[in-house]
Length: 139
Image 1 (cartoon, helix red, strand yellow):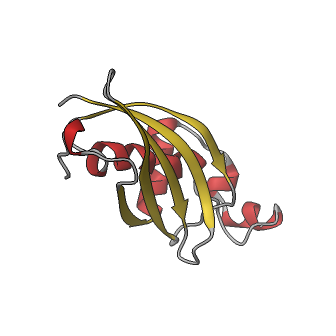
Image 2: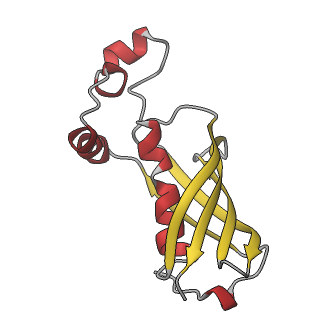
């Protein structure tokens, strides 16, 4: 876990991490949210809908933005304030390896607010999602 204080951060600073989506993650997300849409649970249904397999929950994918802020940038002293202009560009499937990257776009010194431009790409370097994130530094 990173532990950047606000004074440690500079515009352009970048952090990344990778994660592979698993069946267990899908099951846990379903149990937490109650989302039982068959597109996420039934491979045959997903194939009939035109997908090669079950589609990973979009907000499971987007939840890694929280990990980015709370663990990597700025990490320990962060409070995730929100995501603006979050877009999904392509579906994600179980077994995909995602790389989440955040780059500091702006620092508001008066309020200790950090604007982070974030992206998620899959193992083929295809853009899966992008967002503008806001976080506050508690230190």
